[in-house]
Length: 579
Image (cartoon, rainbow, N blue to C red; front, side):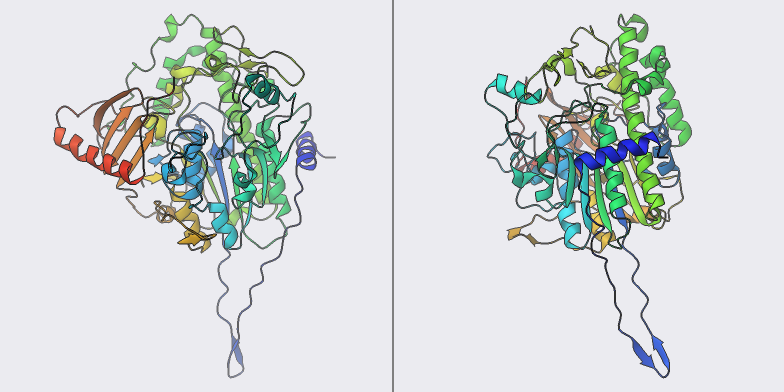
């Protein structure tokens, strides 16, 4: 008899997917050479690896157990224990810009998404993937890979109803206004053979808006639907569909968890009902100590950042009960995601694909400091459920987080804890916003010591160069009649072999005024609401505690010049942050 999880997974797959046969089998033939009576054949080429790229949404640097967190993540811990963890890996500080950079191997401005997904006429701010780019899926598909994606797309122009009432009716599943983005910008138009997930960003985890299979909108979901389960169960269905094929595959699993709204299954929340009652001060200190014990950080160069960003101490916090529950829901969302990753690993194992599959896990940016409730309904946030139950935006923490009928987030203090030991959070260019956990696992291909660390300075744009190298695919100069921008990424493959590699000597970022330039171990950075440049020596101060700008004006001028040149080259035009 099948267990409940299998039944549920099959139900999700049968309703939403049409996973066709495993596809054509790749046949390799070799010429034979006669030498007397002996027939000599050249050795068979090594099978190209399958690639599974999993990205969490708004997960903090220290949330997972293998990065120092108290959240139960046995499957991520397994990947880390048997793979390589990266200590200096970077994103672009927000959801859709990171996705654009990851998919194209370019800075996100080069890829067309300098801000969000609103359509603008400026080349770096198209709000969609630019025509002069190629995605990893397009590249690998052209090299003979099967390709599929489940989860959050968020790199296409959003189609919004002009009348706010009509927009809310659409978000509430009460009216249908057609496509969520231009079909030419959907994943199936950018190299993915199969896709199940959401086109937009924010979702109701129990009944998501903009949910499609391929290009077909999903009109209704089962009563017990939960988006994280559906994303991971779909990934499992894809893997099972490829089980009898010898062709390699590329699978992109873009999680929505743990992005707000804080919505999780009651049984997962219950696991953490008491965990966070000790408060953010105690949790942050404990994470820092575990990170040091794990060897992730050196306490001499990585001090715990200041308390200024945390604000209120826990003992002076008048809403302890609500805040402890909020973080418990955040943990529950990650826990549920990890459970699904376990099913993906298990499917790879059962189909005999695990040994030659690269599994990469990372987060798209630091944990979010946003007050989601303050946004209120509109744009991508519903006002009520499909059945008409009103949704409470808990601006005064008047409704507990967790169920479908409330919208809330962990806030800036817990976000600072989630990003331990770094300062600030999502959307900023300080390390708390851009420093991501990253794990690479590949039994047949990673020869570096298991459970070890890489100090290579990496970036999400590096996956293009890495996967192209390992798949034997050549990054093109032209694609579909368009001149393609050269990739700005660097292969991570040497780190898989345990080699000491510096990686990027220079890195840059800009997002709604937040900026940084990194050259070697020097980093110049400013906040989104303050253009003042701050200078840090990351070789001695990885948490950006000691600002050296005033004492080293020549270095400030040098890095400022590098940033300005990069901004000019990439048509970056910083603008005031939206109110």
